[in-house]
Image (tube, rainbow, N blue to C red; front, top):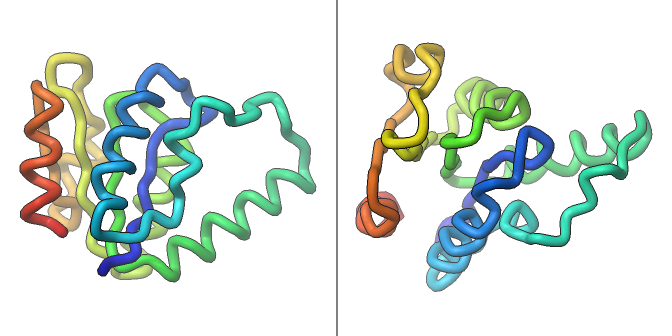
Length: 135
């Protein structure tokens, strides 16, 4: 059983929140997803402030250090997810990046970095087939 850090856009946009939820539920069948809240439709995006943001940073970095692997869905651009991926690389965590190639073009900072394992997809089912191989 692996500990998974799932990364997906929160403040950058929640258009894929339902997809995140389905991916997280799929991975939870046989693994632990430390960041299951990313798939929640009830996140309070307006709750900000230096103290709250510092708590989120500390908690997320702790989960990142504890994780065995990072799975990121990057169809919706997010500064936070980019930061998480760079941090995961620095920590030596395996990083798998998924994105819907019919919706977006992934940043060259990700596709140009051989550290990241990129999984473009067009149909959601392709994500689960790749996850079966990864996990």
